[in-house]
Image (cartoon, rainbow, N blue to C red):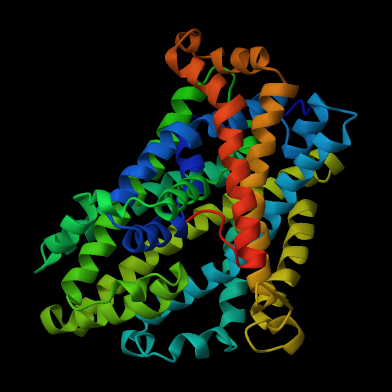
Length: 473
């Protein structure tokens, strides 16, 4: 165990940093997309239920494991199961997964930065063109934006946990909240916006189907950054006197609040700016919504507030999404960074150099897989489709392995580390946790309900992604 282990300077700093890791593109865009294609309010209600019943216990397990061991995921598993290849494999998965997620997340964040700069340059009309996105991602501009983004991330990470990550979160997260609330207020003043509010907040029970249930659970699990090793790593920097349970609740509340507000922004905006919108257009992916659909919506604003006003609104939105993506990216990269420092004894500078070079090469592979290099573009075939290197990275490390990592963590905490040790860690700094209803539910759910649910999600994801067969309706 490291004697001089860094710590977050305050409980608020930890909450904002952990919330920053959770709040990202999945909240601001992925959640509204999924809510739109899965029945609006019905999806919203299920999402909130799953955050409380499924995600919060897993979050507490990850944070407790990290704070108890004061290590990265590999070190945490090694310390509590030193001679077990099986459990140690869980630690490796929890480090490799965020490293590879860093790769494709970097690509998307570069695109967001490019679109933000485009709005500042007055090019909103070009961004709204149908062929702009395809031309942009294969242009040489992306390499310049990649260098700028990498420099910004390295600067934040180099300053450390308290001076870099925590200070950055204290600046970016409140700014993100203010911009989000401001845009929501603006959108709700527009004509026909409340048609979208009705769709979003008034539940239609007939929309509840097995696929909607599965979609809501997957979205809740993924949006809270569970299974990535982030919360294990962040937990290792927590103070012993801080309450894990109350901190976890606040992170879940902030994350859910941002997702809710994002839906309240984007769905009414779509109904207002384009009342004849076919919601099927929104169901393809989060990426298509950000880079193809929303610029058209923002451009439509010029009729009421002029081109400059429309560009300003678009610029604020892309800055908002960029801040969310940046905070997530920093958090994700801290996992392999901490591993290099803890397990190999490297200093922060050397660890950052190794991480940036290796992740940078794989990021370039992703960028080149959009038609630049044939081998990377047509990388592999499965489920009847040709997949690029970028596609495979998302399918394997984001869609597939996350629920598997969550399953391993649940089993490890309850059956290897043991419930009594887990409870003792949660009681540190929180004497009211002992004997509480939350304690009883967390112990029951982590040992039975949640592992079964995560196993089913994992099996269904494998069947759907790689064989084209869904086991859930």
